[in-house]
Length: 436
Ligand code: SF4
Image (cartoon, rainbow, N blue to C red; front, side, top):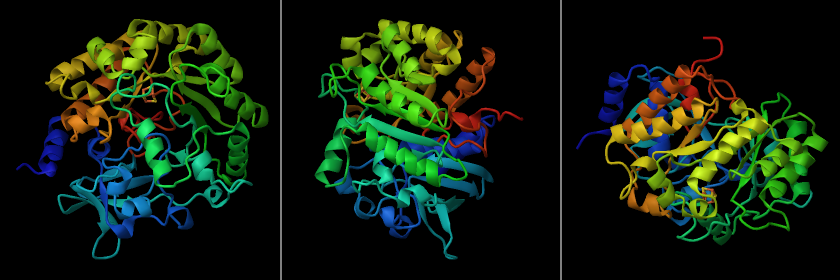
């Protein structure tokens, strides 16, 4: 059987224009990694920042199947350097998979290394516990629960609504475990607030602002499940907007405000902007029409793909095209049984979507699909999409940006290999840095 090392090195040599760091990072994101117990954290009581489960599980096993990693969380992210591929500093979000050929463990000198197929391929750095995680809110809730930070501290991730009103097999997106993740945390007795009160969010931000003395945190994202009716008496734009309004009143301009929400009608989008949001992510999920209808049945039924796209274009008139950054889930194009069966077809389809938006000045971005086991697509495709798809996507993404004269989108921190902090895909590791 082919070793994963052979696959990785074959792609590195066939696509030398894609940074090696990105090949390793994409493989870790699509397939996960394992940890020796000694490389796990002591949750919020230790010196390493633990995985916060900021929205989805992003694991390849359910919590009860993770063993020690369910009791002592893995780190939120790891940073890779050095090794036989000479990796520049690469920040990778942690997706746990006990069966992965990648494993973090100490070598014979006691140094943490990333091993692939039993061979050390990088030094591993772990995120230090931020000072603000050592404080709690007056009601005892942790900052990690209310306002976790990711991307090496750059982004405060505010999942204000921990479930989605697209519910059940006929409505949930077929790759999304937001509702299952909420259930599994509740079942495990972990604190996991369904709807975060605005005053708790403000209190957590107060703690972050006070203790983030080097001002590593630069942006916040407001997000959560889609709201098809109301939460707390508010429809989607006003529900998520109320947090932005409160944050901008209390901390004007301290962070770049972003919202991940549905593609809403223009008047609602205008309200987001009026509330102080500066970047809008109306995620289009997957470009292909048939796959969108199959994979996003709730969105298709309530809004519809064509209307969704029209609203994305409309929102560019409110936010400016640079500040509309719709996400897609890279890899689901190739999920069995309905997805493309060849990498070429999948790349061509994805490229068509990139071109559609980029030709209008809108820069999509993507997260690398993690086939979580409780989702229909994850169950059917535990290995995720082929690594070749992910690596070639990076190439076509950059080429399409170049063709339309675009540069890396705002609100993602620095671009470029060795500099990027965006941790759930390597598109920022692949783009040129501002001064290169
Ligand atoms: S809209 Fe789809 S992807 Fe978004 S939270 Fe709901 S089910 Fe998940």
